[in-house]
Amino acid sequence: MFATSRKWLFLMKFEFLPAPNPLNIAPEEWLDWRWQIRQSLKSRLDFAKYFELSVNEIAAFESMKEAFKFQTTPYYASLADAKNPADPLRKILMPTVNEAFSATQEMLDPLGEVKHSPVPRIIHRYPDRLLFLVTDLCSVYCRYCTRKHFTGKDQAFAKSKEYQEALNYIKKQKGLREVILSGGDPLTLSDSILKKVLSDLRSIEHVEIIRMGTRIPVVNPMRVTPELVEMMKAFHPIFMMVHFNHPREITSEAAQALLLLVNNGFPVMNQMVLLNGVNNHEAIVQALSRRLLYLRVKPYYMFQCDPSEGTDHLRIHLDESLRIQRELWGRMSGLAVPHLSLDIPEGGGKVGFVPNFQTRRDGDDIEFQGWDGIQATYINPPREDNQTPSDIQTYLNEWNLVKNQTYGSKTQAQENFKEVKTKLFPDVHT
Ligand code: SF4
Image (cartoon, rainbow, N blue to C red):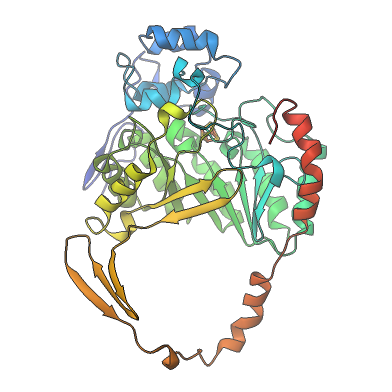
């Protein structure tokens, strides 16, 4: 059905083109993920090899260097337009002085992660799941990153004491069912370190699901090797949460990385962020979603961009996001429509949005107008006719455990908050 070279991939419906390799690097180097990391662009001079830099961009390399690290793989840089500063992919990876402008709202830690960190490297916000920040390194530093308080600080893999402390914390949380490996990007770790992390987590009886948040299939897809996938699949179930923002990011290299994952039993879900001038149009979201779905990747979340420091120029109005979501609704299969979601600033958790199709309510009767204008009333049956399923007892104990679960971290996190905050942000008052 398709060619499996790294050069080209045609999957019946869509053609996925290889990344351009504009400097004609020898293929054995260009397609080597280690070469891509070694040759990462980190300075103005590095970026200037791939881009005609604008005055604004040149100034940013000097004025923004303390704010947030610059780095991309040559592979990802090659996907952006070398000459046009307004190019959508260029806006993701290229610093601009816009990051310094005073913002409508900006926070170093918009998700309130520091106050939900009971021990270093752990963020525990919800009772049944937590984030384990295994590394702060990424292959690209996205200009809109929500975790600028942690990523790109060159701390790399957790030190042995921190790692053990985080693992002990996970072991003690008996109500925990899911661990999300994040960072940074867990797939920047070596196979052997990753194997140790996965094996340690799998030895904890109450951990049911492992999730891995990664942008590697987008920015260095050659890292997804058959050896890596073979090693990881021994620790299933592992869900891969990838992060494609634009259809041009799905090259033949990226498509083959995704196929390698899904063919080896990894459910792959995409989390995109709506970004100003990058993907804030329904035509782009549909093109991205259809291609991903065709590769058996579920378009999962479409996030409102968090008010992270220096991101005002990349955020869009929530009304615009809602309009995009409404445009997609009904015109595309539910499988292809990502959920629009926003994180309440200061760690309030996620809230989802669905278009409001209700036009009138009269007691128990509710009138709706659908996506294509058809209007009708849904008449509810009497509430008194509700019956509880007869086998409910089988599931009630389990549910009550989930529902009433609290987690020991909460008090501890609050106690630790002051200390951690003072250490990390001596000048920040929250
Ligand atoms: S890959 Fe993720 S964590 Fe890393 S900079 Fe981009 S958004 Fe932030």
